[in-house]
Every structure is written in C-alpha cells, then in structure tokens.
Image (cartoon, rainbow, N blue to C red; front, side):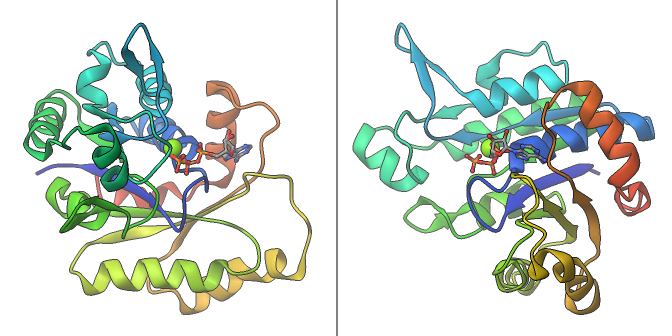
Length: 234
Ligand SMILES: Nc1ncnc2c1ncn2[C@@H]1O[C@H](COP(=O)(O)OP(=O)(O)OP(=O)(O)O)[C@@H](O)[C@H]1O
Ligand SMILES: [Mg+2]
C-alpha cells in the first residue's frame, strides 16, 4: 500500500511547499524515510532552456533525494498560471502517465511520499482534469494547508468537504502562518472553531519562522505537529 500525503491548500501561496518540507522532517522523526514530488510546477525559472522548478528543488533537497529533478517534477511551465492555461500558452501537454510512472518509481524506493499539489483542488490541469483528479490518481490522503486569518473557515471547509464528498481521504488541516501574526480575533478563534466543526483534525498551527532551515523546521515540527494523527496513515 502506498503511504504518505498529498499536500493541497485552500489557495496558492498558503505554504504548501514549506509544509511539505515540514512533513518530510516529521516523517523522518517518526522513523519513516520520505521521498517527495511536486509533479507539476508553474512559474519555473529557466537556465539555458532547462526549466528550474523551485518547489521541486526545495523538496528534493529537504528529502535528500539523489534522483534527477525531472523525476521529482516531471512537468514544468514558466508561466505563473494554472497548468491548463500555461500548457495552452506554452503549447506543451501535461503528461499524466509520465507523472504516474514517476510517482510509482519513487514510491517503490521510499517508505512514504510527500506530494505537493498545485494551488487548490479545483485548479485545472487539463480540460476535464483538475488537481483533485491528480490527488485521486496518486491515491494518498490529503493534508490541507490553510491561512490563519479571516476567511479561512469558509475556504478550509469548502476544500475539506469537497474532497470528502469526492471520496478522497483527508488526514487533516495545517493552519500555517506565512506572515507574522496579526493577533486578530479571527486568528485567535479560527483553530478552535475548525476543531469544533471541521470533519478532520487540525494537525498543526504552524508559526511564522523568520529563518526557514532544516533545523528550524525540525524544531517547530517537534513542538507544533500532532504526530499521532500522521502515524495513523503510515
Ligand atoms: N511558516 C512560515 N514561516 C515563514 N514563512 C513562510 C511560512 N510558510 C510559508 N512561508 C513563506 O510564504 C511564501 C509562500 O509559501 P510556499 O511557497 O510554501 O506556498 P505554496 O502554497 O507552496 O505556494 P505555491 O502555490 O506557489 O506552490 C514563501 O515565501 C514561504 O517562504
Ligand atoms: Mg509551492
């Protein structure tokens, strides 16, 4: 059976990459060697015509993988867009079988996989294929990364309930501070409200880190992650 997590978010820029890195460290702490993938990445850099997927590279480094980056991120676009419009503009197809093959290969080598999605669940990849379909194909339970402030209850419940209704497993939610706290009333109450009404548990309220390094991530995971929730899926 495949083990690991598919990391999605309520939006783009909520901290999926940083939380995927934190999850790799969390699994390491539990004694599970994790590999990682960012199967499709938009807004990639380029050097001499070779695409540079920044998220894929960060995951490769955190998971200390020696596989080529093309296996970790098989599909790159330079346009900072959802994959469907990016693929139309760049006239390049998203090759889902190649992504599935890369995932199969990596999941044979690693005990668990941490796979970062693209934006949120309904981001289009192909005309009739969105991130939720990719998540279903990959077959790992979801972790939903959410913002801490006002609006997050609605966005989180929309994401979690939609995934559950589509028959996907959702391990839990991570509320992540990509910015220093505003100490707003919403920030103070959101986790409690979600704990009460969200059908899946809050795995972590992850604080803002001034310096993101392997060490600071590990220290923060140790303090702020509920590893018991993760263990249920390993
Ligand atoms: N806990 C944190 N502390 C400090 N900075 C953070 C934290 N989480 C995320 N950030 C910063 O917020 C920004 C967005 O995070 P990240 O790139 O992980 O988001 P994402 O959801 O992966 O975005 P994308 O949709 O582009 O893949 C980055 O600059 C990242 O360094
Ligand atoms: Mg990312």
